[in-house]
Image 1 (tube, rainbow, N blue to C red):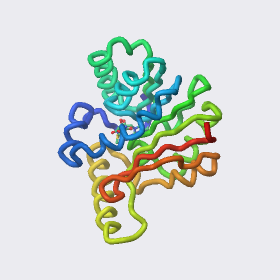
Image 2: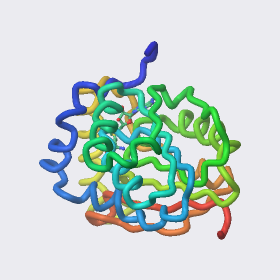
Image 3: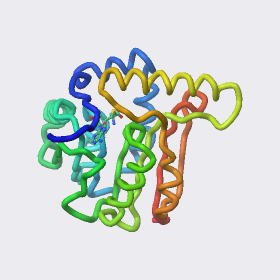
Length: 220
Ligand SMILES: C[S@@+](CC[C@H](N)C(=O)[O-])C[C@H]1O[C@@H](n2cnc3c(N)ncnc32)[C@H](O)[C@@H]1O
């Protein structure tokens, strides 16, 4: 693929263990916090799902859902497919994978009622997020929900400085490992609001360092 997207290929096999060693089960809790909200969805677009832990659980939890998973990393997509075939072979036919740079990608279909981005929007700049949401909105239904998991820096309090330091370290580590050039968490909430989404539910973990959120376009 001809792109300057960060390259997560080398991390595909060890990503899960890196995560457990650094944050224990907390990122996992964040990702799965709102899985029950996805049980009515029929067409999901999963952005940058990496090794597919969320996609596999989603396919198992919702036997009617079709999932389109998009990621720039061929190795991550291979890990995702392998996981689904191993853990839920009956669900493989409901999964389609595309290797693409999501800073340019536009879906080939409309009618997505679920969009998922777990720890992916932080790989984008504010401008990338704005352009991505603008490109995706015509492809989602009026009652679509968008699940987000992200790192977050508390607005004030003693945790703010520690979170800033940790996030700066994580960006440095990902720059070294993947050549990710982004340096701060984008203000995706402002972009979502501009496009008619509102935050319907959210949960914080680790004192606000991690957030899991459900964004909706309208009450359904
Ligand atoms: C930090 S990992 C997060 C993986 C997973 N969603 C999770 O919950 O841990 C970011 C993922 O997004 C993908 N990614 C990063 N930038 C991308 C881009 N511009 N286009 C497509 N995928 C991208 C990476 O290949 C990787 O799989």
